[in-house]
Image 1 (spheres, rainbow, N blue to C red):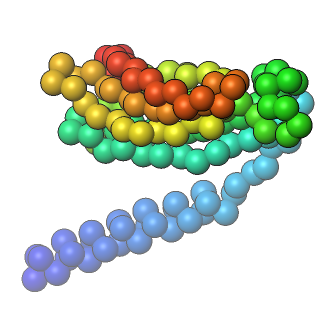
Image 2 (tube, rainbow, N blue to C red):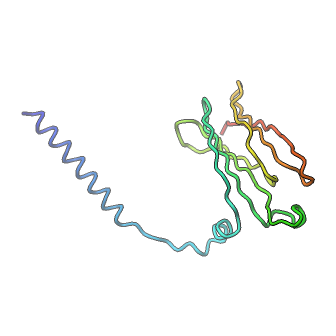
Image 3 (spheres, rainbow, N blue to C red):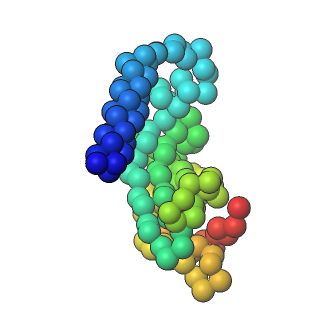
Length: 148
């Protein structure tokens, strides 16, 4: 008999908790942030490319490609409207979010992530390929610290 009252009480608490959360969801508001010059610039002038995620033994690595036409020299791509890309690398402890180590690899032509791995000393190794101004394929490997 006592179990019945305990279960009823738990169900009532869950119901009240769910009802109060749904009330909050119905009170959403919209803020006009049009005056934010940084956000306006990002949304109107930059190009966001693919997002790649890599689950390593201890870390999660996310790499985002982003292009900015204003950062690309006018004569870099002759006769086309292509733009140089930046790679943004986020390294976060796997399984929790308390922040991440962030890196930028700027102004690359046709970047491609080749390999992401964790070294024995817990450094993150990122291998990429890209092309120089003359179109020659180049490869680089970066050793990035994951320590906050």
